[in-house]
Amino acid sequence: MSDSRHTFLQIHPHDNVLVALADLTAGTIINFNGHDILLTDNVAAKHKFTIQPLDTGAEVFMYGVLVGKASKPIPLGGPITVDNLEHASEDFKMGSRKIDWQQPDVSAFQERTFMGYHRADGSVGTANYWLVIPLVFCENRNINVLKDALSAKLGFAKPRGYENEVDSLIDMYRTGKTVEEILTADLQSTPDQQPANRLFPNIDGIKFLNHELGCGGTRTDSDALCGLLAGYITHPNVAGATVVSLGCQHAQASILKDEIAKRDPNFSKPLIVLEQQQLGTESILMREALKRTFTGLIQANAQQRRPAPLSKLCIGLECGGSDGFSGISANPALGYLSDMLVSMGGSVILAEFPELCGVEQEMSDRCVDEGTATRFMDLMRTYNARAEADGSGFYANPSPGNIKDGLITDAIKSAGAAKKAGNSPVVAVLDYPEKVSQAGLNLLCTPGSDVESTTAEVAAGANIVLFTTGLGTPTGNPVAPVVKLSTNTKLFERMPDIIDINCGTIIEGTETIPQAAERILDYVIELASGNIKPKAVILGQDDFIPWKRGVSL
Image 1 (cartoon, rainbow, N blue to C red):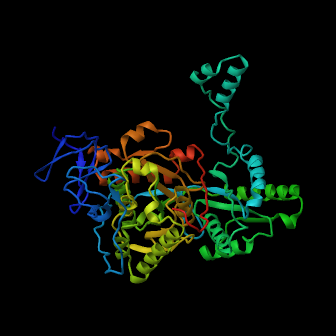
Image 2: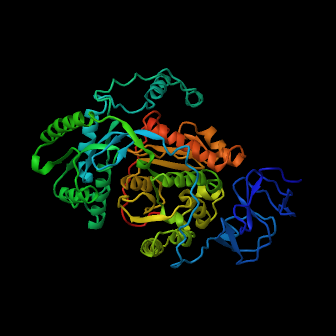
Image 3: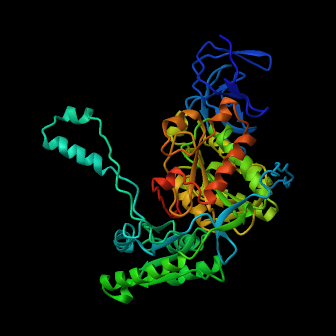
């Protein structure tokens, strides 16, 4: 058999493996650069096969970088798998500055604006939320009591659950249906009643940020929690906050206020801080919290959307449930969009440091100065050393789902993940939970874990998060809309309830990377203006997990 168009791809001229864009069967003849390659085995779409025979120890390159070494001989046309390839990546050191780059054409977007909420510190929000936050896990119950009291009454009811389906199951049981009849029944959902009209139409919601930190751990953890929460309170999508403290915990209200002042020295949003041990009974605490939160909501509701330039956008770049197409479709599309936004004076955040393993040299060379490059390299080395000390370095990052869909080593995963950063210079390197203060491409040290990383990107100032996925993930965030972009069309069609944008068009050849980026940016502008909602917001996917500063890949 011979190959047809759009069945394989060489990502970089230096690569010695090709990516299968469709399922290829053993015996298929691939004509590459005038040479025939006979596939020795079936190669599933997203997986890779060799363009030359490789001996044990031979280096494998993708995206132009070292991504692994052969653990056993691999024949010409043989697939690379976990059985014949092990993680390997190049070492890195201080190099020369490589900050010259080709800016994309942004003339079609240069004068575009979005309708956002202008804050006193000069930032602009894409939404308008009120936060209710515990300073320590002991207060989670009280936060839940406030949630039960406020959400439905003010018209912020949760999305539909599956209570109607449970009612159907109860009816079947009561009428004597068998287990088999119940299992084969078609559960029909019925429309829920619409939530009451919102009392405060200019408020997008009240968000309750429960967590399991604040005391009992290290002071470093509690200080980092205060910094993270300060990032949310000062976030442009947040109008004000109610903070509930027990009183005796490590995460003191005074530390939180100091962290707020670091991020916004002239902070002027409504901030309510209540201490249970000082107030006394739960009923006193609850009544005070309800009265003061309600009056804060009145102030927040006075905010209205006004035009803002695209330079006021700060985009978090995230990936999760990645596959072998991530680095050649959705991620480079975000990279092109990142370059567009940077060209217009906006900000982007690339996080997930375990997924930059193998591309450290490129990213450090792109840093604007040696001090910034040094900080990046030090954070990478320190983080990996901590992981290795616990018996799990960056090499252990790929999940079973990643591996099944073509990401055999961490270096392969990282080389594709880094494509989200485009080509612009790195203007700053931030350590968790620091906040963005410079326009341009910012690197933020976070785990590769989807929710921990997204939580941190939003604390750093991202007012929208663009999240690529090849396998599907429902991750969202309480205050910043999270947009899901599929790397392949099959996923987009299979999980339309959580995927917003399809980038499989790039794999199919019906759309170029720049065209996809412009389509995504059009969507972002509409979203930032409040005209559309991504699926994660519709589903109420409010994931919030602070990073307990230990080893989390």
